[in-house]
Image (tube, rainbow, N blue to C red; front, side):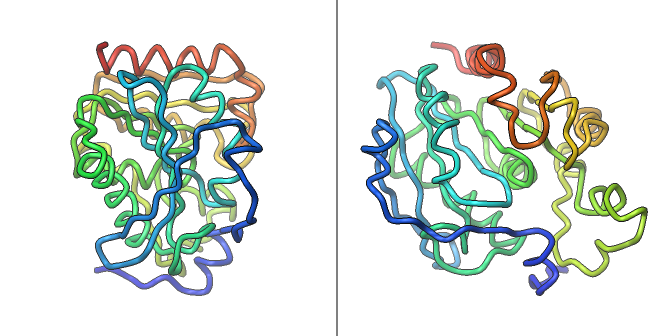
Length: 257
């Protein structure tokens, strides 16, 4: 049974930031294309399509639970630098996107982003890698259980909201009061595509042990990449060149040129 998002979800799960109006393409130096598209329930969503070379692999990025696409520009620039085309979007209630966030809503939004790429942009699933960070790993995991793609990258993932509640609230069943479940561990049983799990070994928000649980639930072929010294929100900075090389290596393995 689907449960509607409640006030506790807004306090503990979703932390969207409002949009700040600037010329972000000029400031970032990236070829940002503004994209407006609709979720299946009619919610109007916003994203950035960032093309690289015509033959470049496509990365569909589901970001974490805080901020909006603006806060991913530094990371986005590095992904573009290593030759990836990227589509990053804001869930409902984040940035310029309309509506209010909920678990089912975020799933619908990711499916709409996928449909935009495959239908409006003509991206073939075998040229598409799915990438989710933190809460976005659970969102993209749901997408991967329903739609085909070349590979799945899960960064700083957690098995479920229940697992996070047990970790942070001394075993108290706080998750019973939340509407969201985000059962990534269960979803992975339905996913056959190659999986790369990435985690910082000093993650204080989602401890690496939870990432290892996610990895254990994934089916082969799979690999686990540890970023030594990285916390939850600095993986790409701490990981540096080696981190981006590992991403590029995985994508090259699953998407042949």
